[in-house]
Amino acid sequence: MTEKPTRKDAARNRALLLDAARELVRTEGLEVTLKDVARQAGVGVGTVYRHFPTKDDLVSALFADQLDEEVQRARATAQQGDAWAALVGYLEETMHLQATNRGLRALLCPAGSDYSSVQACRAVVDPCLEQVVELAHRQRTLRPDITARDITYLQVALVAIMDATADNPAAYRRHLALFLEGARLRPAATPAS
Image: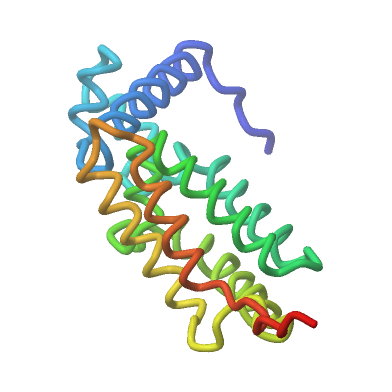
């Protein structure tokens, strides 16, 4: 039995809902409700539930591309030969993306871990970060007491800074730089001859 093609109005409504949800979540965060999405899209709540029976379904559809990109970024980071440069690049890019999208920021922090799509993403990202941290330790570019968990806590702290400094969206960068400066292991200075 073949599936019926999606009716044009159903496809249009789905696109309207995703556009409305994308805008609301970008500016308001994950606290938005399915009712808020319906109102923003100009459709009834029943239309939302037909397309997205749960908020988890909506979040999965809304962030599928971004979470996939996060996974690809983490995998690429783990494949780089220079672990310090890879770690710095990963943190700069992922934090920039979170700074520009409040919903993504909330999703990638502990509060977002209730969503199945985030759990699947973390299941790939976390081991990649562990690989990078281990390699940085072997390359003697990262202090030996810094763990992958510390990198996760740093991201949570930077998100809190983003939320606290909404009037200065780039403020988190200073704190990222401070952390990186403190986390970097530098070779001992050799005496001048």
